[in-house]
Image (cartoon, rainbow, N blue to C red; front, side, top):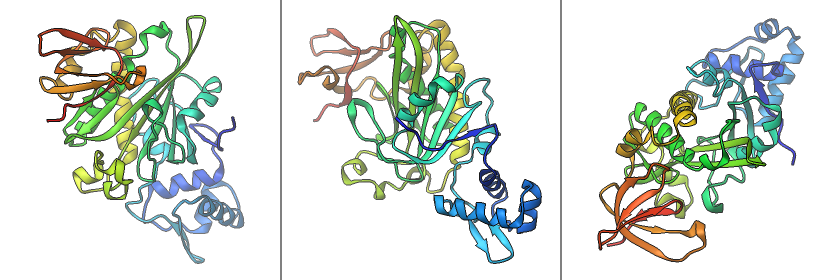
Length: 339
């Protein structure tokens, strides 16, 4: 499978992307052609050709005739240096692979995994074939966050399934710092005001009991109005924009997710999920409420009803039945019981 042409940062990025990052760092300022040429070591004509290449790729660069070019203030564009400058991590996001559009960052991450170090972040502006859990499509219009982490943990593959909960918890924490009351919906979603705002998809490659790589895909409805989402999605989804009424800095939010996720991930590797459960359970949606479990992942049409009690030490969901029996569910799709 071929992947798009990814920018790798930090590293030897193409001159046109160096120009783009320079414009994004000083939004609203017009850079003269002479200044662009001087700062990048190219000629004025080469500078103009690189700007045209960025325009052809869909970047919103404004050319001011012979004066030079700029990007408008408040430009909602992803920037690898913008993410990098906000990171407090030691491993996660220390290499960033960025492209404007692709089919799926999770698919691309699998192809890139062998040549990328542990913790590499793969991001894009739009996906054409974004994936959710159980084969569902993840709508991926511009303004969202579509990213995948390439991880290479030295643990047994059987320990990996609860990691989606950990990633969801870290994402909820980052959204909380952005002013939202976010909660984790077992096993891999993040809700705000009862509507889905983010989702997690973990995929693993292992051979002979050893993990080759792990892909943690995170999708966040950031600056996407729910009104522009497809009808079936719109009814149960929300976005940071809809919740706050303003455009959020996606670079800052991405860095925030990684900053929250890395310490949780390292604790998970060392001690498993059990050490994190006291922190995750208070952020778990529907605890103490009547719910129903439909185990579509297991090919069963059976629906189980009960009161959500919390999590077992391995991340399984605990449900109490009307008879007082506690049942464990290791996989499933959780939703409120219809009244």
